Image 1 (cartoon, rainbow, N blue to C red):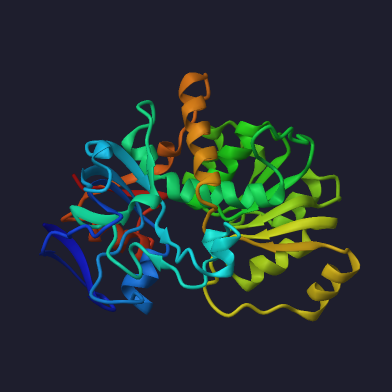
Image 2: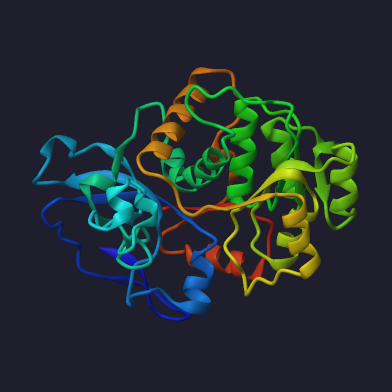
Length: 355
């Protein structure tokens, strides 16, 4: 098969490799779509993967090509939860699989979706209903990262009634931040405000259904003034930091109300530093700081699938596929990686059409 193989840092090649062979409990999947994640950029160009050579890519879907253990799923479309838990550690036994102490991971520790075929455990496969498109199925992984953060905050969930007047701020409008915006709009929240720095982000916010005056472009205005104006000086009840930089971390604390909650979503770009005055504000305002990583499987994934199916049946005008700004085939996908690395064009989600 053809695949993009990472042999070392900044050494990725489109080559012919042996077809993978599924072991007991696994299925062979013919990959159809695979998104490029922001984490793929440092993995390819800066840090490398945990194991190399490796086929990266963890945001993917495909069709089951072979499965001796369950022939009934052959020919079926599936989404893939990329984290492979050990099922033995304390976290796994508590069903917190995303916090497994000895996990494997498709695309960073073992071969992933930037190839024509991939093997994955049956446990990690989620059947895709007919109304959900291939692109949407490939975006389930980032969508579920957004779902997980919001469910941990208690802002969405099955049978949950939203307190729609709460002030919510999202800082950082990449794929995850915009998916958070979409899910909050779906849940009925009105006072949601956004901090970004790209024209394409503002346009996406408008497409999701929020007015332009809910968007603060940091190139032209100060987030502190913006949030204070929109919340009558009260600050955010909930603040989702989706960047991962010290300055945005401090800003999150400063713009959150007493007894408010800050959800740290963005992967850190470097060491994080916390100024003393910011630390004092956390203490004196009795704030809650929370971290989130990955998603809870299968709960978050089932919730995301249910919302996608509902959106198709309703008059909702949005879908995760709105966020796809670029497409490449498997052979030329490194052009997409370079766009993300160099920020040479405005982008949100770059999708690879594999097969």
